[in-house]
Length: 116
Image (cartoon, rainbow, N blue to C red; front, top):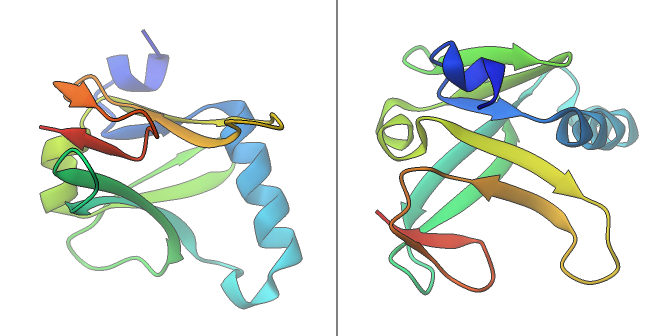
């Protein structure tokens, strides 16, 4: 189990994900100072889908930092994401950000949506 998850974090980042996010922020000065918002919303082929966006922190957000990257999660999404890990896979096919969610009963083949 990831140490951050064991300590009660809602969402944690692997070092690979954090390094990719830092590189993205370095290239896009418009998002400087913003955190990575991890959220869920209705949609996708399994009922709920994940979202990742650079965003300002809101008053009711849960906020943590991993490997120098600030992560924010709204309370609604936290209910579905608790214990999830965001990773980044650098591959020609199937690469990109991957979310491992212990709360998902079923995930679709694309890995971007899940059934709660």
